[in-house]
Length: 126
Image (cartoon, rainbow, N blue to C red):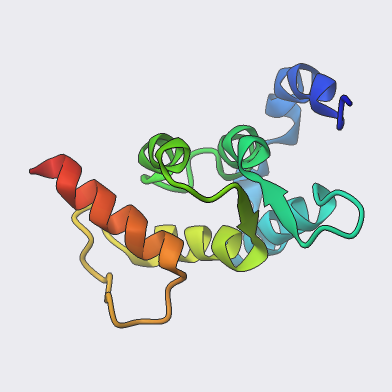
């Protein structure tokens, strides 16, 4: 079953035409959330991890300094699907946490996936 994956090279080829860089943060946040909803399959409320690995860098482009690390982390994590909360939290995390994780509060209401990502990054730095 194709699941629309054959369209990915076509979409990637058209990325410059779809550059959301002109959007302010609120417009981009709406666009980012729309991308999650648009890519859900049928009644699923989640996205497959493999789809997120392709979709996230196309959607978020250079708006997150964590994208490359997050894309390295995801295949090592046991989850198989990404929820809307996890998807949206990655953007919020990217906007509010510094490269050295200043602004990150482990007691805040981040999804477990984001806590695991921070732990993974901190282990990688040691």
